[in-house]
Length: 552
Image 1 (cartoon, rainbow, N blue to C red):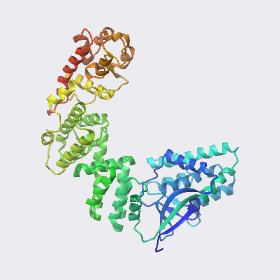
Image 2 (cartoon, rainbow, N blue to C red):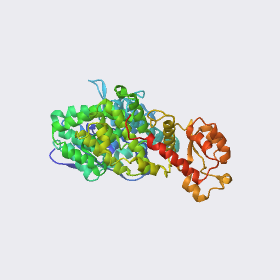
Image 3 (cartoon, one colour):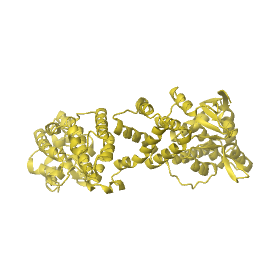
């Protein structure tokens, strides 16, 4: 073939007449319930039409006469999966064999095996062949993409049951679907020359509007630059990386954070990350080294996400607790900084660095000095300073962050007027201050903030009712979520008297084992705006010491 060919063809006939395969640079099966259902509903809703256009499919013909799918994997795979489900509902053996031969596999007498009409990528193909092609339904699910394949199969089965039910179990409705998919569910089939650069075509199609995940583009680029001689090495390292990270959706986030830890702040949107990697990793040697580094460092990243990781066995026990506490906030901006710290600091310096990051995080949450984007940029750029060798330990890091972390005075002033809407954050703040008052070492570390046992109590209730007539409506709106109006109670006790008058609550506060709650009864005869402010000022003094910037 010496030129690009175009043909309008029913997708069923495309599958029937060819052997198709997904190349290694393509992502795994990605369609979820929404996309699978939409395709099946589109067929259902257009069954009486003369044709229904399904978009463009791009193929490349290989020397072994197989067609490589450059674009169209999800649609083709879903149709094959649908026919695998349809076959089960047929009671005619000849019809079942026809479906198997046309859309699923052809039997090779020499190899004594079913040769699939469609092969997926290395991660999915073994499962796809066993579960879909060979109907081995007890095949173990090892990846998210395997689950999506199984879900697509089950959704197809549910759709077929519904079709039969709506048509009095007349099997002909399934044959109508087969004919429609063969002839009328049409695509523009673009077949490119055998010697064309599939990687370049893949990227060009994306630039012209076809939706493609940035991770697919990146993988495609890295494979293309690896070159024919080292492509297998690149594929092997990439697949090992994906297997280690386990969640495919986390891969791009990891690469972004890894890249930022070395190169500074970078955005994912508008392909900024992809373009920067593309501009800096140009040779086969650079690409192979980059994929290898990603694979080797992913264990550090996973440890940042999981305080129970065996990775932390070599560190002070406090490190696990700091990681658990940081993850409690469900934020990710600080991860590039942690990657750099773990790669470049001694083990002894890591605990102090984690303490510093946690204090920075809490102080910024209270003061709101830096927004999410600015904070992400600050973390990443400090990570680069560590990678460049300009920051060598926790003391250096503290000095480098001097202008970014709110000072004691600023933190205290903002804490005195802070309002907290997220209950889990408020429970943590109050628990940490309680720990400090008790003299607990590292009070900022997470303890029991589980709402099933300890709940957040609004002293002035969110819905005050008649028991709180000394508060105006405006006062309630202003002060009900102030830290000074919040305390901790056992969950059952909290539920028993949510809107009770203060004198009733006060008696219960006296019995509390928590200083932060008992002190309300000991210090205040009544509850009003002035006392909310007074208590919050007292807590602010303790907050500065709880989230101290000093090392032990």
